[in-house]
Image (cartoon, rainbow, N blue to C red):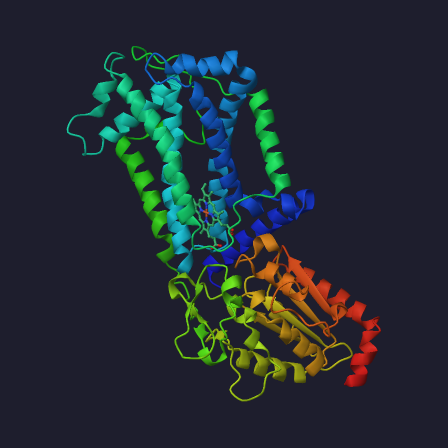
Length: 518
Ligand code: HEM
């Protein structure tokens, strides 16, 4: 293992440990780390709704802005003040969840290959969200707004784009006019519209994106924001006065951290930092180590009935349907859009023609991965299962992105690992149990919230529970199948799960039947 890989695996272990701990405290449905993107949407909506209320009372003008915000904060503290605080704290929370979301996608390596699109649009979102947030601070026109506005224009002046330094316009109160306030107020309304549009673009290549946190999590988050708003209301820091330089300001470190940096560094250095880190983030998907592109699935029209199951299960909108091109009597055929495909193989697992009980000749699936064909999978599974010996014989199927199941291989255990657990058609489980008389099949993968390919765990659970096509047939006894979703990369947990499964099978009546068949 290279040093970089080792470091990444350590960071992933730490991430899984943290998520595991939060799962124990809050449960899967309330674990905020599983809903960071959705929480981003949630806080965005809180900001929009609270902002709309504040805007109804806001007066645009150099002499009007500050008193109108003060009115809400002091006279109408019980509602307007709370709305103002909600607006501020939800904006802060938006930055926090955005940073954690970015970090999590990075740690999970979900930014390369076809995923560049979501990553790249995410980087653009950072700029828009900061622009809207900083602009919001100017709307109050208090001392902090004065400090932030003057520092920003001085910073912008460093760029050789303005013929005359902009900072001159801010030297005296007199030159500051109402037009400036109309401009910032217009920007504060239009920027969120751009953010919303970009959010839509951000998730447009993701099918069934989770844009709402669970109801429980949303309620807790809203309560937390409300309590914070009542305990520590958002306040202005005295009216702006261009004749005086503001001192002793309370900085919002989520949005305004750049300003203390401007005091310590030159404007050029801060530009270098900001532009440099944006460019670095933007090109990250294409930087070394080289991303290993797994060939995308191929369609075999002879075996495709246009059933749409692959379209329904693809997590990245990478399979679409088009009118039949080969003259067969079906209306449609599947097409893979290579640029969107992450090669998870879930489509192959969804295809009804991936059934291993089919005849020996020309066994092909309607859609399948060139790197692991269904016929290849059947052949290697057969040969592995035939070699098994011992009292209790088991098959373990795992996911390349979770704990490595291949370490469990032994005389009585066969193991296969797939790019995603949902690449396994349920009929393969039946095939192992009935055609090859294994005693039990253990299916392993990440917890639902951690699923590298987003929907693999969910689809597997639904297919095995008979709630989603292709379903596991009822003759595959459920007590001989075990699902194990781990929030850790630790093989020990899986080993002990396998042992307890083996023990449960030994005491199981069904084993007698299996042995008789053998
Ligand atoms: C507040 C801003 C943001 C919001 C509200 C947001 C929201 C979302 C949502 C809802 C998803 C779909 C999650 C799912 O259903 O699996 C998503 C995916 C993603 N986001 Fe964001 N995002 C934001 C900013 C960012 C940023 C700054 C980055 C990184 C630069 C980023 C990178 C990604 C990536 C790479 C994915 C795709 C993950 C995958 O392939 O499974 N996002 N985002």
